[in-house]
Length: 188
Image 1 (cartoon, rainbow, N blue to C red):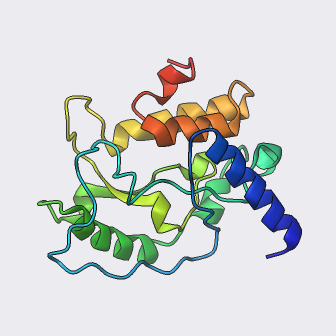
Image 2: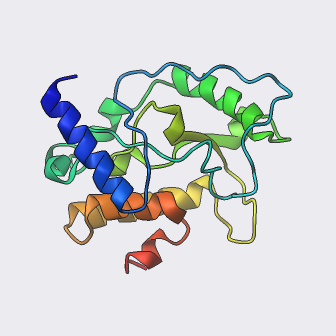
């Protein structure tokens, strides 16, 4: 990694950390899977649902996406397809993480291997710290599901690309609690 890129990555991470969000710095390249959990190993808690366990899935950003680059990255129609990881990668990770979360329902089709900080907001495409098996079904009274999170992601992206919200603020809001992100940013 060039020293200029390390500086940009460090500055972006520092800015997000200062905003109350400690994130990894995943890259667009394929990341290795974390060591496989045994079928009986539960290392992530379901207590946070519909959010992921922050110890297992704190979120991670793509260092190529910054406030200065949004017009050539996330705000370009179709850009996320250029960084989305292959399903061969995400399906293996999903099965591993279903075991880590200790879900009694182990059917992979009942989950979306979700980017906690979405690609639409500059989330890391492949860092396991930014991916988790999000249930398609409601897990609490909030009604939060992978489907309802998608609409929040789309509204936040429109707000960022429309200049209503800064990228770091949108990333912080969705990683703090996606179910209240729109309200917290005055978009609901």
